[in-house]
Length: 79
Image (tube, rainbow, N blue to C red; front, side, top):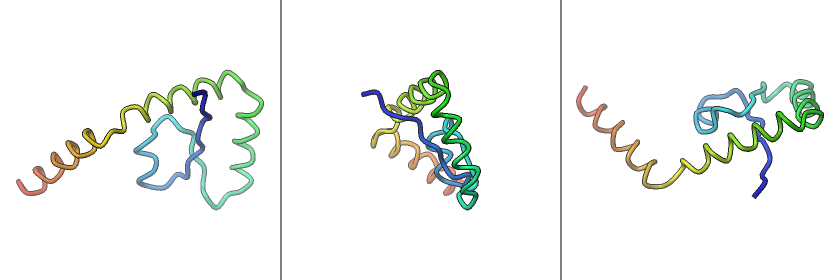
């Protein structure tokens, strides 16, 4: 599918999942509106961010998530 780029809040957790996505302060509606306008005006950037997001999303599988969680737990237990 074509998809669309995501604009994420600059809060912990979400940004690590889709690192290519632009970020804004979730309470700054003017900044969000400005960033949305920039994406609407720039087909090239919209396409680039959309493709980057799709590529990152393809990497999000349950197997990879489970393996990452196991690595983190092993490191935590080693402390």
